[in-house]
Length: 245
Image (cartoon, rainbow, N blue to C red; front, side):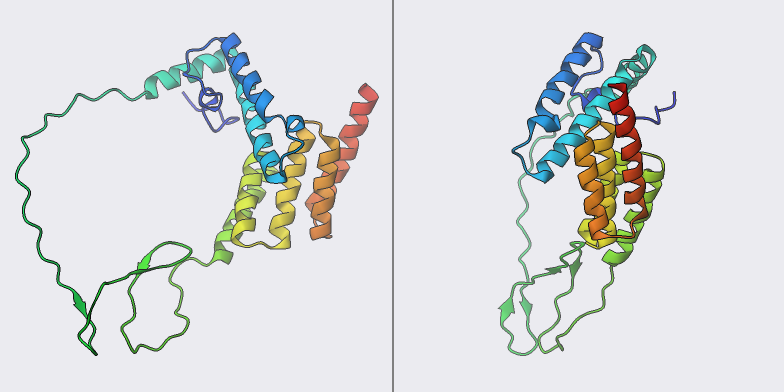
């Protein structure tokens, strides 16, 4: 049974369900999440909290749409039943043995004065990999970096975000561009983050907020083609929506 490509996560888990609920219980779980995370109910919150609430709301909406189909609901229910971990039998615990006396620690000595000092491994601020502490008297100064440069990480995240954006997976693209903007806060990364946020607002017909996101992206990056395309799409969809009303 192949996984549904339209939904990366298990929709039952997104809605906080066990996988055996009927459609009425699924609808009730979705409405509960929507009542707490719909952007119109969070007008006094910060932009970051609104963005998180919008992602939660869109994820719950997508999960409800998947589980509203009987065949998809049955498929995910069977998948969860197969992947639930079995309770392992309790292992037999051997009788406790007397603890052995710990071996004495040998303090480290500096070569100059012979004063015992505690070894203190330094941690790099980015990757958290312990590196050796330089000996006393070693020349100070910048050391060559042995890890991946932030610019290379941000470039990889940006490329993956563009692939997700071309596939119209705006939630995934927003997550990737947000991470790229945190690693390397360039106008291009921040503008693409706003473009994806604008497309999410556009998908839920929050036209004013979508326009604001696209225009802010153009302020950061005037040559941002994706923001201009988003504004053109916004004008078309808002015009059709107003005519339909």
